[in-house]
Image (cartoon, rainbow, N blue to C red):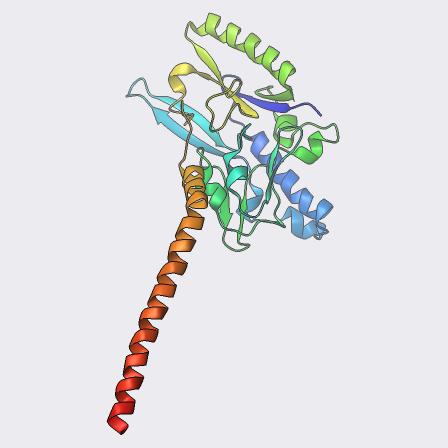
Length: 269
């Protein structure tokens, strides 16, 4: 299966939030469909861990030229997926279609993925001791369906397909927007951003001047993975040092204990 991408076009978005609603409905349906949860309980589930797509409204600029934007919190499904690299339980999988998936039944709730993600995507459910995030509707995609958010979008602001299909549509839209608004636009994540995340499975079309407002960093990075690797490389040395220190302490205690016993024997004589 070829890599699948989602694109969010911030210009075509009308902020109706149909994508968010359909995402929540689909995740509740999964509880009924895949986990044998009673239908009535599944559709009425209020746990936030079933909300994979949530909006944030931001304003930037100074009055009277203030601009309002809506940013969606979602997983970007990184090509290099630092969350997957750091997970000690191997609970995170990268599917053939590019989806980065946390397997709930394997997750141990250590939150290492939260330390590694430069976009601050994974969230922690304290009740279940699990982390969660968007799973790219990989099950739908692998059965020939569109992602729930894409299916619900009434304006085509969200669309998906193979890399070639999405790239073609993205470039066409950017050309149109740059001609209309006379300013540069970017397709964030379409090409490799850096070595830490690579390219993204979720591409965002935004005016270049609004990258920061949408919290799309030029060089996404977190030192969680680097610190883990340092600890991993240092572990044998640290363990050896700990063993040596313990052995030294034991020999010191044994020598002192011998002196105490000898002194006690002399006093008894």
